[in-house]
Image 1 (cartoon, rainbow, N blue to C red):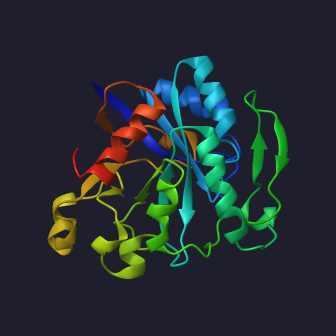
Image 2: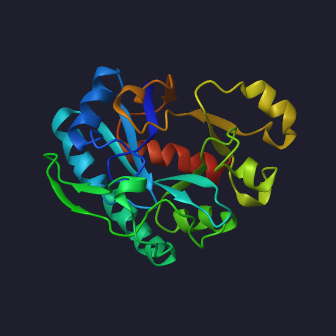
Length: 243
């Protein structure tokens, strides 16, 4: 079953996310874009996942709880989980390894926690975007311990990507799936980085504003539209060596 999906979306909890990236706005824009599955992946936090999942459940849209983790190398990695409990348990391990730098909303933007009715219920006080102390070689195992998967984000970008930070994709990192930007020429990327020849590529929007949601044009061949099914599909590729 071909499922249109976008597995890298930010809410207003990310300081770089527009404040109109509320749970219901995200869900409704995803439906307008024809998506059947999305993932919420705020910077170094899963704090708005339950709200977006609840809004998605009411509207008939499957939502994967996730996080865009910033590694010690300043590389972004999308982490996806089958349930909110798993995602929040993962964040419990990430939180003490974030940098305790107070946010400056006037500089970086507000970091808004919301409920499923788009009501602001709080703000994250410390800036969420800096690098954590979790290095790239730890990430996959840490996600696996919480039934999740780790996928290097936008690896073709010149900043905040594993290729930009490390220069190449070491097979020992354990990333047989990588994300690329919607307009990346995958063939050219593989010619430049031969270690990527057997890697499966996902294209996601990395939407920080509503109009970008669903502009990635990605589908996955899944047995169903559920979040847990999608994560299990990716988990099998990463840990079982098959697609």
